[in-house]
Image 1 (cartoon, rainbow, N blue to C red):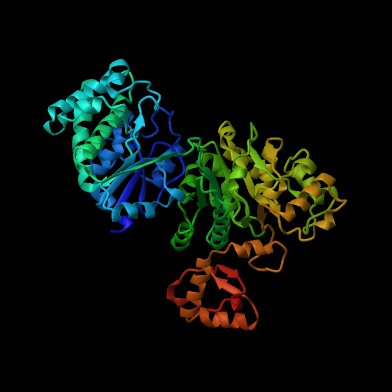
Image 2 (image 1 turned 90 degrees about the vertical axis):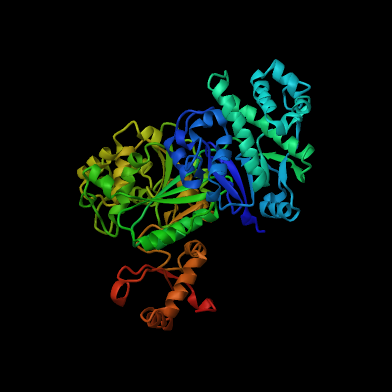
Length: 602
């Protein structure tokens, strides 16, 4: 019997570290109640969505999800009982909690479960807890019920009417310990017998006093004692094989999921793959990361490829802006395009509108490599500031030295008089890495502020970045430069003595250990891998990209000679692309460069 024949439900009622595997099945308690208030307050819309995206709910099929505020984790047990086939009809079934789990050394649940199956153990539960040790300060269950919890004795009395169990009831009431938490792993047959027994009692208790009890969770508390009664009965009367196992309390101070947003088109899909892969490689296992990708016409092939990057604690969702643009009566043509920029760069204007139900979100450009846990940046306290951003070192260098652009534009005048930025030398920031304070931005009409400023500027040189600088001057918190280290300054020494000393030192120090490298500019690391810092990009290309490219090279009648010609010229290629109609060479060829001659298979 394999571990796939064992399923352990993990009960959640709010976001927490996700325990999920072939054995562990997270389940959202009380999903039918949506964001209604519970003992821990109410869920935000984004937290509720995270629960829906990452786990099953107790609200499908035959269920009592709507009674969760009374029955607690028992709504998950009821759901499993009535919808057992949806779990794959396992031979063993169990329940743990998101912060109270069976203690397994090194968390090797598969090995633990295999040993249970091999040993043919009927029941696993936690060690009994002494009534006094558990903070109840009574010598027996009977004394506790008489003095503190009379509804418990009323519920236990219902067992008197069940001939199979009534003889064991008196001795149980005199016990000075109980098996709390409703945690177990048991054989399927026992589980069905247990459910039939306990829910008969709990529904009767709910009808008679559950809805009027002083504590709304009374039925849930009672279920622990009834479960303890049943387990003790099996162990002492039925002489089943059992195992007591210690439990581990996980931290209950779990921060909200980290929300990250990208904006991408079809052409930049492969570079987004690298950016997301770099982010994933540096995540913390005790945090959850939600990645949202704003797009307009990305191909299903590229979407599927990106979605395959997901892990247990990193989830990805695409948001198409077509309907949002229509709703706001904004055309793609209204978003001014300049140089090599695409309309998608303006999609960050819509972020406060799209994510209005969350507190903050981190925007990242696609052409980056992340070298540190993004959680550190996300947890930055912005106070009342709209954004957390990094200073625009290169533009400030231009201003301090009265330089003009290649088009002959004097940037000082442009920023001051065209954009309306009062002190560009001090306040200019990069917009490729931005921590949005949605809570503050909700107080503004942010989208229309941006669109009005865009119309006022006309054709901004640095597109949306100029607009954001113009409307948010004095409303940002500046972040350390290692969180947005711009790579195109290949020789930082040219700025020595031509920048404020503290800014120059911070930039050169960040280069030694950049947390995010931004591959800004016309030259990209996939086109010139010899430039400084390009190696980070190449280190984060997923292995699956190489495998896919090699497969395409071997099988494609078009790509194979194409690759041979490139290799003969000592070019180093790897491809990320999708098939086109009529066997034409892929019109929107998305390519990566790599040292293909180092790969033995090439």
